[in-house]
Amino acid sequence: MFKRKFHAWLERYFYQPSVFEIIVSALLLPLSAIYYCIVWIKFKLSKAQKFPIPIISIGNLVLGGSGKTPLTKAIFNEFNSEFKTFIILRGYKRESKGMQIVALNGDIKCDVATSGDEAMEYATNLKNANIIVSNDRKIAINKAINLGAKLIILDDGFGKANIFKFNILLRPAKTPRLNFTIPSGVYRYPSSFYNLADFIPSSSDIIKKTTIINPQPKMVLMTAIANPSRLEFIFDKCIGHEFFADHHKFSKFECENILKKYNANSLLVTQKDYVKIKDFGLSVSILDLKTTISPNFANKIKLFIKSYQNSDTIYPKL
Image (cartoon, rainbow, N blue to C red; front, top):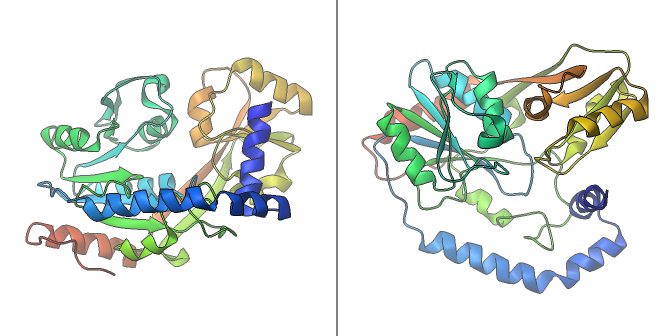
């Protein structure tokens, strides 16, 4: 319970701070200044290694969600038929160590505990998915190349300044009120780093359509994603909502108690949550977000891929 309350407080602190939270932020500014310098030096000293195939990074500057996962799916769907595409990510909160092949040509190789929730979401939702999790992205990139990859997407890859890539940066739907790096604000990279992006999509570049699979009259929203306020558009379709820390591992007992608490006949969850509870045998409704990219967006990536072999620098700042 304390953990859930703390994460709810962090959400307010970063996005809707009260006077007290602004004072806390001000007191932490010396730590933020130290963190800023460390990040700046890391980027300044990093030398990017160029791999034999093009690499696209989907990233953001803030803690938590900005829509990286649905965008990664959209880019995979756009290019996998032409270029054998691999998605590489850290596999945050997974129970395994080292590099793990989660899916190869659509064949799922492990369970969600081994892969982590985001990687399993990719594996179960993408046709002919090729997914690798690894803390060391370079090891995973070389493995993907050995397995026939022609294009790689790095989920949350912006911070990997030692890898030559096309940097796509997403802005959060809700602009943070405190424009500082952590712990005084929500930025894990300084907001000035937007200048390092090769492309920042506008709202017209990412087309989203959300539907509910198996809608029920008495649904309770249960989710463990960052910035759950992003789901405000669905609140009026639910009889209640329960938020957990990002990547929280649900138990069947926990889910059953939420259904009883609200006398609900279904749990409304995201795809990321669903992969962790699908075997519980409970009544579930799923928020299904379909994302596509605009022709303008697709052309930026195609231009990068086309120019990649003949360029020593990322083509060009857009």
